[in-house]
Amino acid sequence: MSTTSKSHCPEEDADVTSCLLVVVLVVASDGVLTIVLTHGVKMPIQCSSCSEKRAALRRPKTGHSLCKECFFGAFEEEIHQTIVAATLFKPGETVAIGASGGKDSTVLAHVMKTLNERYNYRLNLLLLSVDEGITGYRDDSLETVKRNQQQYDLPLKIVSYEELYGWTMDAIVKQIGLKNNCTFCGVFRRQALDRGAIMLKVDKICTGHNADDVAETVLMNVLRGDIARLRRCTAISTASEGEGVIPRCKPLKYAYEKEIVLYAYFKKLDYFSTECIYSPNAYRGHARTFLKDLEAVRPSSIIDVIHSGENLSVKEGVKMPVQGTCGRCGYISSQALCKSCVLLEGLNRGLPKLGIGKHHRLHGKILNQQPLTEQEKRKLKAVDF
Ligand code: SF4
Ligand code: ZN
Image (cartoon, rainbow, N blue to C red; front, side):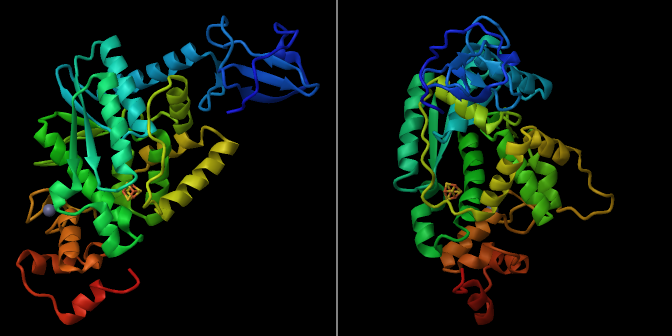
């Protein structure tokens, strides 16, 4: 965002497309999009949608120069179309919005509330947050969620890792260090959201995953060769996969991260933008950097990657995991124990590697409370963890 001030160009109404001196487009702090010419003169651009107001930004997704109001309208309308086209909700449903206080979920809560009122979806909306127990990060972001609760006048439920699992992320990182911590956190969060949603008796959960997140996940799953996840990650909604699993959907699936930031900025939404203090997550970081490089060359790359993921089909005969239920907690699992129970067992036994990598053959032993051999224990305690 440039701090260039409002244009003082004497030729405000000149036809900018005929000018060969254009060098850069800037968004001023007061929200006016300006063209800076090589001779130093600044010219405002008209909104290409209403042609009445000055453009305040250039849409990263389409390249259109729009005024704030036309951008808000276009952004919200696209999300409405996504919701309608995929029939994400039915009238009368209770929907929990996964709220972290970050830009994506704050924009999601704001847009869901706006569209629910504008188009009379007749949804009963509420906010659902997970407290991972990360001092100096989540406690602060939850303060933002609490303010959002007041601002949007929506009920809020917070579920914590400590109450659900007996472990905070602070304690987990103390035991396992800063490698694989996001694996624990991600697995626990997924189940925590489901458990919170069950307590609230909601019909659906919607999350703030945006187009960039989905495209990154497609790339990561291609690079890992994870066919089962690749199939699932592009789905805009998941049906209930079994007892204890609430259907989920992603209304922002086609919304670009850059546009979400612009929307939050121009709407002056109250969100929390600090990074998690435990966020090494290197693999996703590389996928993200790669995608941003692609986007810089061709903005449609994000949607293109999503469409590729959607259109990939799996050859007949490829073995896919069979979904069952966890022998301990009843949550969905393709193994004898769900990932969450295995990770937890590893933490409680002081064998944190148990849930990392493939130790499926040990699940039966754990379930039947049989002791592990010394050799098995040694491997799961490995110092390089
Ligand atoms: Fe959890 Fe990792 Fe996200 Fe931090 S960055 S909240 S540890 S998943
Ligand atoms: Zn389980």
